[in-house]
Length: 418
Image 1: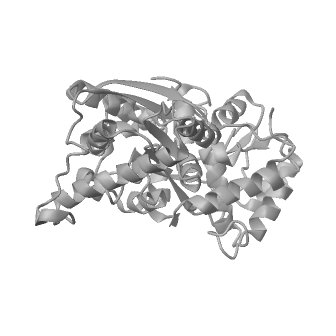
Image 2: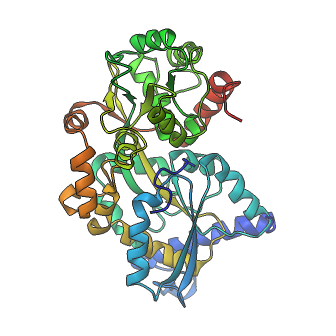
Image 3: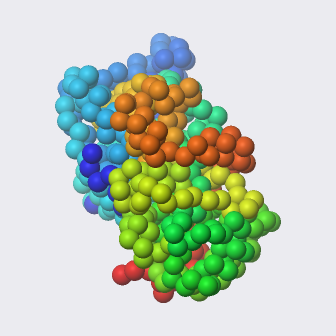
């Protein structure tokens, strides 16, 4: 499996790009209308044929998929299964990786030059939000709901996370995420159990607590969005005007942070190597690095008093400008990836624990290697924490972008590794 701890992480004429996006949406709407038996608005009173996006491409297509979330660790097996079973639809899938902060600029440059090379993007809420804010993605739902009926089977929390996509993405995997703290029990025999205790510990041990840049880190992002609940801010959904306690706390804590790693992989390596002793973590970033040996198996996790889970998910998004043949193949692929058998692959080795976004996909359905990894490196306390801890959604796109921008300017500035 490529890079098991991935770093989370022109110009077709502008009018042509806009027209391509409008055409893709219109085509999907026509398909949905035909499937529902809607009458044609054209002359003659006969149903309009849904021929612009066929059920399958006219010939097998090759897809270029960009992963900016480490999602391939969870979904590569699903992609392989589809290609093997449906070679008449997809002949080849080529994958590449980038970081979430690179995504919007990369896609926009290709669209502006009329040289779109990416057909599908696998992203977390960070890249999703950035693309929505810059109008980069093709509208998929509800326009193409007739092609994606398996989305009706999302679990309740996963279904709520899907709303963050605003119709521009399809959720593939889900987990309750964090924020958790993870620590070396030899050096931290009495771990902090509240934000006050964490701040006091960081002051007494400067440079030994760290979290990665939120716009490129699930644990960093979850800590950022989870603190308003812990600290009792007046509006946890308004990072600009409602997070007075959170911004003050992060600035105070930042006095004792040496630097903010650019991604979670680096932060976990620092924890495993002893550069730091406490980091922000999540269920998946706790389990998977211990499976892989990046972090020792006996390292522990804890929660801070008053914590709420802040859910996380990863999505498939289609850049504007992708043609109808490839759209047909992508819709078939996404529908396939949301079947229970394929969703069970998302248990992986705990990277996004649990992982499946579809309800009633249990660990005993997962591959043997996944079952063994969770048995050996999972934590029994997670079941109780997931069941009995309040559960919140990530910030919507605009608010998430605003939170990252404010953190970059007011907290991270001057302490980012070059």
